Length: 592
Ligand code: TEU
Ligand code: CA
Image (tube, rainbow, N blue to C red):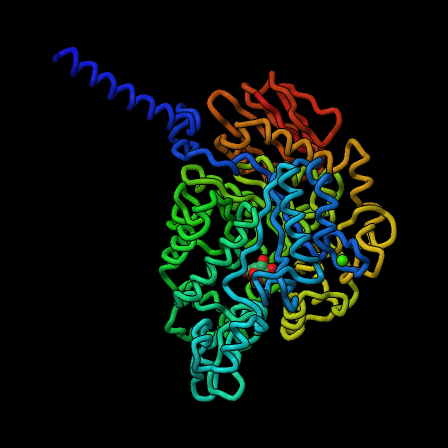
């Protein structure tokens, strides 16, 4: 019996051990356990690189001046050559395009401007052949006022469809509370022929959906799963913090001359969003091993793990810590200039907070932001070497890198001479806000040049032919005149181009566990123009130096790197020594 129990015991041990091994095979090297989130199970998307496409401005194939799905399909080889694994497609659903597709009138249809559902299925199939994953844009805080649900709600403001939205009685002939929408003006619009108002945290054509209504939630989950069944791999989730309201809808002290207060104030006073997000995840994403990235602004600090921890609501969320630094108190016209030190600290704080929690999605640009080449670089560094340096600052951080279309060729902000040359609803509002605050026309236009979302929405610059090779007809929005110099054809054909530099960065990341999983330490953090950091995984290490100044700077290289090798550099003749001489806007990456 003794032998028997011994053997049972050893069998149990064996089983336990196997179990442990199984777990370890998913885990990151044990020695760096407590610092690099080794508790996290490996996920298919950890080592991936994503690329955002803004379909309307990517490539037009039928000569109507509007980008389309066929255009995207025809450029998959280009993206594959760059090294892209995941494509995030900004909305392609049927829409009146008041907010460029972020106002959806039918979640089950493709906008006719972009093509057909057959085109979409072809895109999914072609991407599979290319070994790429597609993620869609999930816009479910609001829909379009042309959506059937809202039309039915308007037709019967006391009926069941009104319960899909936030219909509330006005107070003393005025809106229920004093919220300003994200695009200006009251966030409440009157329902014709009633004393009721409906809530919209964005444009009045984007009524907020009532997530408290279980029927609405069920319909949203059904729609999400319907797209998964088509073969997509996940979603980027729009304005998701907005789905939880403070149902008392209290007024707050005004924060501007218009007597209104940002609707964010009400959202910040709402609690319990996690219940919705967990339910959505359980009903949809979990079933498909999806990759999800939340557009999450203003997270409370203790909520990070709930959002992006191993069992978080989302796989990851965008790190907007750098972007929010440029928000003005009242709008674009009083936005502070970028401060290098505050920017570096913001990125570092994110890295520090994420280390034992999960991965964030790192970005320089998206369709709501100015071009990084203009926004983050000092004037003297706005050249190809500088653009590559900017790439090195963010691409080798811990987290999932996203590239926005055109960023990989160094596209820039676009000068416009009149507000009529802008299309974006938010830009028009910000321009007016600047004039109302007493800015001159020139100053208001300059604020738009610096901040407008249309900077990112100019057509992709493919070559130096008419309309930058984007279309054969006048594009829906003006082409940046610098396309004759900055375009993909030139970039692909030149060894020292920005495109080739991004291609190398992507390759490095694909081949390096250190870059994907390593810890992050900021160094030289009191230097006023050098951005430098070290990544570590077990015995492996790499160091990144970026010199933002226009002067040559010498830095002492930590001993362990003096025999290291240059992994990538934006100057052709970079060398490793005990001292590193950093030329203006030089970026150098050295592996131990
Ligand atoms: O953006 C949400 C959002 O909060 C932004 O509007 C942000 O406040 C602004 O861009 C800062 O300049 C998402 C989409 O990315 C955006 O394009 C949409 O307009 C918006 O939601 C509404 O769907
Ligand atoms: Ca077209």
